Length: 126
Image (cartoon, rainbow, N blue to C red; front, side, top):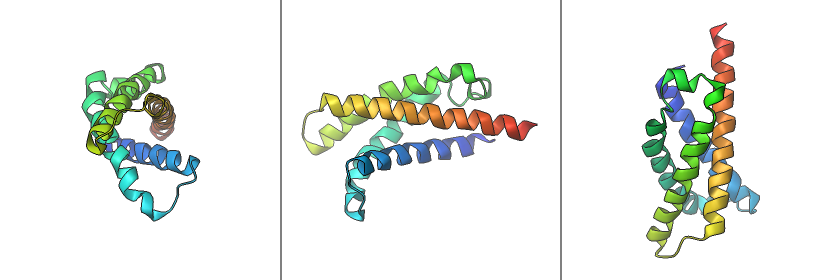
């Protein structure tokens, strides 16, 4: 698969995890879109700033299941950064529980997505 597909699907994975977080709290109507964007955009920007530094778009890393720690690590740093940006936009403080849950769920979501990516890419290579 191409890097473009990986970039787009990473953003989709972040969007799905973000929307799932709101759904978990029972917020699923269209009125939440500004709040979804308020975490999705900073998280996505932070991800795309940090992921290349950890080699997350290099073919030898993207295709290796032993490297799935890398997307988790990137997200464990990206999520608190996104929470900080969100707090600054809102003129509030970072809520530690929010930042930790965002980091954990986003890291898990990205590892699941990247694991699926490896599986799909290997199946397509046969």
